[in-house]
Image (cartoon, rainbow, N blue to C red; front, top):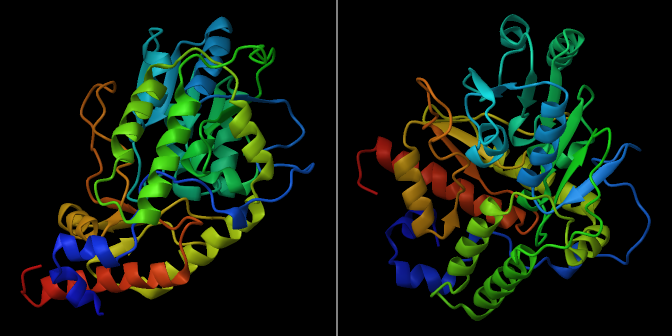
Length: 372
């Protein structure tokens, strides 16, 4: 079956014979699990790492320490998740927005020119590592007394950031965990060891993941797991008090073969990038390189809405990384030209071929004047 045929199939036919790609994680496949063993996780560097329920809770811990040290001014990229800014806004911080370029990166020069005090919330998006020029800029503002907080969520496989006072991440965004985040760099790490979650987040997400696994296995097109995932996202958003990462996720984390997961992601990202090739209709902003393992493969295109709608009909679900901010003030040049394509370990080169053929056919159909 060709991609052109896929564009014209009915949703009923698609549900019956096309594998679903993307969206929330189902339960992890056995091939990515091993016996528990002592190992160093990619983001650990010998410093104390505190594991909590979510990335938001990790940032809440950082916010508390920064405020105790007299900081109340935060610089953030112009594109940032409100759930991560929330701990600062809720405590009266002044937020200054830094512009991003067409690769969704803050320019090192803007850091040097604009960041003079307080703290910087730095986020290398979509798997990037910081360039030598960026590291020099981060080091320069640190020498001014600026606290550098690095959100490593999109690059947890790449090792700790080289210039940072604090490091945080939401682990469940790239790993099939029920909950989990971490914070490093805290002078007096909070004692969350005895604070079990009362939010129900880990249990609810595990139930949602299991329901998705069952639905995929049975071909249940009613998607009973969607409501569960919606409930757990809401529960995660409002669970701001730091509590320890659940025992189930901690045990699972030590069994995950992160090296194998990383290799599969790299193979998928490389395969999809090569298959998509070059086009005047789209541009890959984060192709894999020696210093970039993509979290997703991100396309810049003038037809995000149409392409995303067409991919959804094909049961290829692309995440919306940032909804328009309700917390940042002032004129924001909100990105509307970017679409993230799943390349995670659940999928194979065959899946990447399917995605690339569909995208290339979608745009060739538009160029030829035919209606998708």
